[in-house]
Image (cartoon, rainbow, N blue to C red; front, top):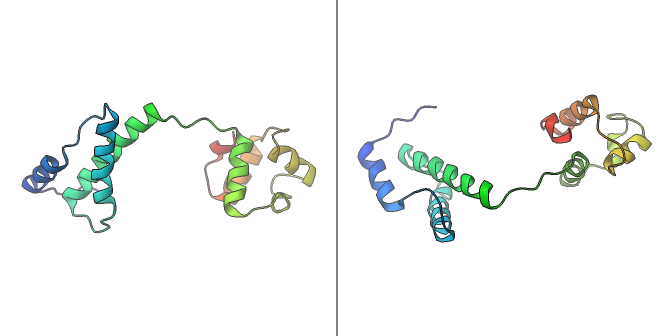
Length: 132
């Protein structure tokens, strides 16, 4: 979606928010405050939406560098998704194998095959890459 932005309005928002590359904790906190102001407003005009997207980019860039998300093992991802969705091991019997196979996969004793990753992805409506 391409937005038509009023330069004068956008310039005013930029002057108020002063977004910039985040280099310090103070810069980060400032960007978060400006983001929060826009985040609570669900009826953003095009200029606010443009600034919101800019803030998301600079915040994500900073967080990826300073707060890296540890890689999760496929069975840990499965455990998390199962817990979040209220899924029991018994619910996956027949989806990815017998009860013994399901137990071994969930407990990390057996790798998840590509076919099982696809079946799990279909079951949970996520990308198969989470399980590979």
